[in-house]
Length: 64
Image (cartoon, rainbow, N blue to C red; front, side):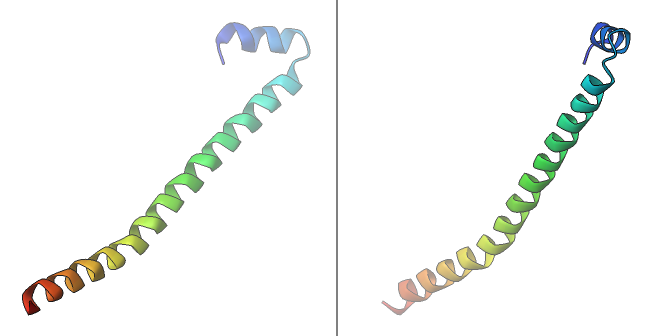
């Protein structure tokens, strides 16, 4: 939000506009936090699975 937009909003009774902008920013932050949490959870879950597959592949390779 630029300074001109803020000044125009306050002159024209734009308190609602400022509140709407704050709400939009809050939603964007929440969305980013959710995305980061999902990536972290997937990374934590995928690591043991990958490790297990690699161990099995190595066992198969050495037993042949």
